[in-house]
Image (tube, rainbow, N blue to C red; front, side):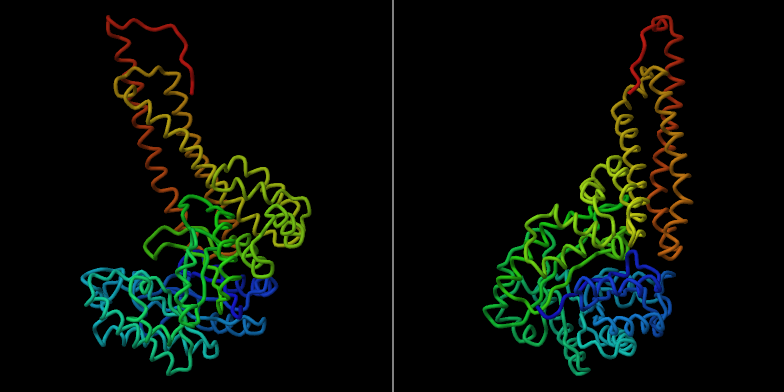
Amino acid sequence: MNVKALHFDMKGWNPLPDYTLGFLPVLAGFGYNALLVEFEDRFPYDAFPAMRHPAGWSKEDFRSLNRRANERGITIIPLLQCAGHLDYFLKYPEYRAFRDEGSTYQWKFDTAETFGVWKTMADELLDVFPDGGYFHIGADEAALRDRAHFADYYRHVTRCVEYLRSRGRKVLLWDDVFRHHPLEETETLLRTVIPVVWQYRDVNEELAAPFVRSRIEFWGASAVQNCYNFRGLPKISGQFDNIDQWAEVNEKYHPGGHIGTIWGKVQCSYPVSPTGLPHSMVGIAYLAKTWKEGKIQDRSLFFRELAADFFGAPGAPLEKAAANLCYEPDKAAPFLTELRSKATRHGEIPELWEIFNEVDRIFAYADTCFGTNAGLLPGYRAGTIPPKITDNFLDGVRILRERVAGIAPRLDSVLSKYFHPSLIQEFKDQRFTALLEENDRWETILRRAETLWKEREQLPENPPKTEKAQCL
């Protein structure tokens, strides 16, 4: 396999430039030789000044990334979506004219103006990254209404490909749209690009087989880290099965390259998920190990070696921490504390895991309180729940509020060393606004339940009860 790439999805938790540049030797040490950078609104396009995120980088930052990556033998592959996943651009009123039937997800395929916008963006990226050799145009998950719409899409994608090839680039695109059409309909285009077959759960090798039979170069793409937890940290070892299945495909079909993807968001408008560099390091290391050894036969050995060789913490309970993160945050906490205390290298990673796990612990506590309260709601409304229980859960309301107030400055303190303040604030708003509003709602219900109990107990047919309530 020639190209061993990691996906750097900047619409999620993109680290500060200095930290990212300092992490390049780590990636090179694991054997990565390419970084697929999906910029979205983190790149400062001169032609589209309205489309800028406060956590974005400057062009000089990106030039430094390109230079420092090349010094480490890592090629930067720009990714600029050409069809869908364009809400980062189309959400702005200034660019609403490009929306496909009003959608902020994808733009019109049949206008010269659309291609002109894409070409302008591509030119700015090519100016900053002049020497990479590859360019990824996305083209995945387009919402195509009928065959005529597919024809418009096909012509638009072809035009983007032809332009980049005229600029001396090898063009990558995701394969999924083309899976739904016979190869003879799309072969002319697919022979001019490198299709990237992405599968992030169970891997069906038959999706790669047509390219092998037709001798069309293809790459594969696994999921190093999922982004499905909108609380704290997603499962850091949840993608091992996917990576192992891809290892078997790689051994059988020998693709020209492979991309380990890390999605920071499903798309721009979704909540940010704490994935990416450096906190997806376990999956990054696991994928790299499969490139050297094939499917991992002993995962416990992998964790022991990673703890010792990467973190400098032989005997640290990395596997136990990974097994409980996201699932059982209270159980994960002591393992993370021990790992962080023993780590002599890369201590920022367990530090990040620990703070995000604390967020999960708060949500686990809230689930217990809110879930039990939901079962008691009919009784609260009827005034039949005794004070001992309502007092218990009113205490829970107070404790939850205090825990959120306590973790907010800790998040600022830890995360600000690695991430822009706007991302930290976005994370806090998305996690805690609804949580605290729900907490307030339960406080109102509980206060009302107290009043109803007192009123009910004063009725002649309901003499005061003497039995003790069991506090849940």
